[in-house]
Image (tube, rainbow, N blue to C red; front, side):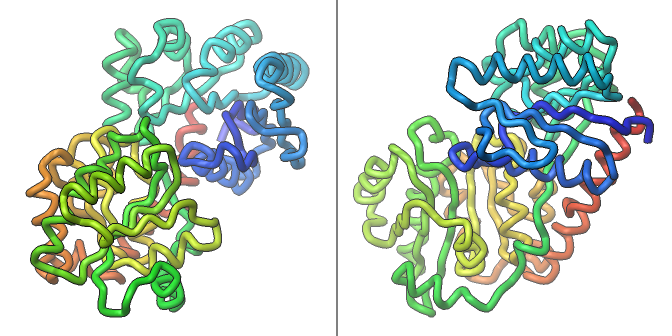
Length: 369
């Protein structure tokens, strides 16, 4: 590997206020770099000084100053230590990276997730086109990049899949306590969705999940839908459940503490996220790591963790009838073993998306710098 000193400019690594899919991804990147014995310095835009640790520089001392501090620290690091590579952890940072790295002739790689590309400013796309490589977490995200980047060499836009913690997300025996905590009976058939229940996240397919579960409950009265998460759209979603007849079969526990995530996955019989614009969907991997079957949309990055319908069930996310039929097929035991057997799902998810594969892929990408 040619790159031995890396500066990683990331949105956030440790700040608890920004915890989400991108932060989880960033932590896996950092872990992989350290495993590869790379000398890495992280500049976290949203990380506060109190979040800092060795090798992490927190810039968030207020909204106005954090961007200035990020630019200052990146400039100082590149100018003083001349790293082999700068990892640009978000499209928003490409203008900064392009200018500073161009000035000191340091290559940089841009990581893209999906939603930031939907309405990206031309200046950011132009700056991303100066990247040594562009990494996309799914084929869907790669296609968005190719549409926007124009004459940029397609061979330099690489699919770089997400990963998950297979040691943490594993089958456990503590699901009974979680079911009791949620008010569920042992005989209930539990379908789970986990996400941020905000009005800005309606493309996740929460409405369609509720409507499909209302149909499912006509055939399986003891089916229950656990829609876990917090946000400003919770009351409206309860109203949707009331209008379509799901009623109190919808369980919304709100915010889920970190220590309850794995027990929650283990408490369900099936995980669904019928999203229309998902960049990838780490939650699919986490559910399958726990041995749970999954259903996702067939229009976006979900198709990568679903392996085009071979590992998880892919449906049209706007077709409520198709979604309800897929849920029924799972709950009634009519799915093939490769999409329903807990041991098979866990083994395949680790083989295809486990951390070792993620780390090896990162090493492969960096070897081209």
